[in-house]
Length: 128
Image (cartoon, rainbow, N blue to C red):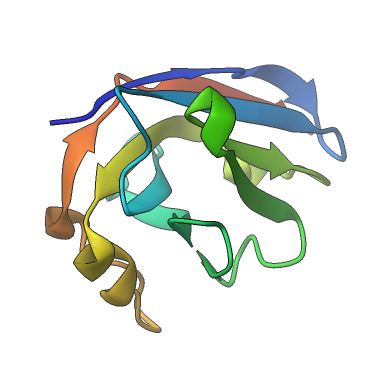
């Protein structure tokens, strides 16, 4: 099982940017994803990236504002978040799974049960 550790969360004003990092141990898995959960809401998939970084998936609410990337040499996956909005406020989680996890991404989002490893989360708060 992959061990995951997120960092980079914080508090910003609307329109600001943050970059989240997720270090995987021992190595990045075949599919790496970012999820978020706001208080009182269900967890939702934000973005995912296939091993090698050639293919990515995004939720429509972050398309064009967030970018997922990975650095295999550092076993790290990033989520660059630009033009943040108050509705982006949530706990953000890094997750890892097999290719099936990324393949599960549909118009209604990914199947989170396909991701077998999860980090502890990092809080993102966006004020208006």
